[in-house]
Length: 279
Image 1 (cartoon, rainbow, N blue to C red):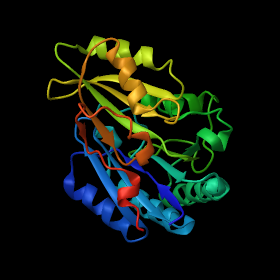
Image 2: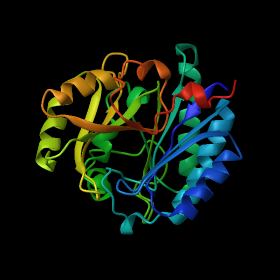
Image 3: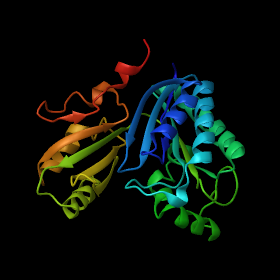
Image 4: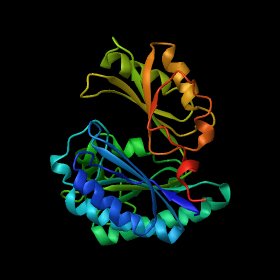
């Protein structure tokens, strides 16, 4: 197993559709994990395989997602611009960085051609000039407006968002850690948003303050430089403002980034990448 793929699909409530997407991708590459969240209305799949296998898996998953996820009726907490919202290919060693980049470019072209969706590159494939957050900002409508205004142009595919499936964002990157922190009562949504703004000052931290349907408020993060800004370091930064009641790992993460978390913290779905990768 050389590479990973971690597609995010904008569906976290329709169990039959999530299963169908997992099934078609799992026929092409090794399915390691499926993480579903109804409030975010998103599912994160983790796959492993050769460059060709993960590319094939992403293409087959894209076909099902584009055909069945209607973004005109979508609601959820997580920012997104498409049915297959993001489709990063992840390299686990620096030696595979070039392979991941080539696989990502090929996959972007294949998805755009087969699904008639515009595909935008971000991250390393744009020398860091384009981020996932800037492409998602304002949603599909704002993405369309920026295309019309000449501010953006798809790297592959048609010049307009798909009428029901929006657009897809593709990258090649090293592993990141998606980690959500549930704030202890009586923290409010305003508190979560203020804390998210503060911790975005840490290197490689993307953060949002969100309110879940359970009444819990959450600081949802993507830790893009987890060797520097680990889940434990971010926990300390958050707890400088308010206690954290529990946390959640979204998808899988290398074990080394989870080792320094305090034992007192309950982490939902705590599972390392090494536990799931075939030996």
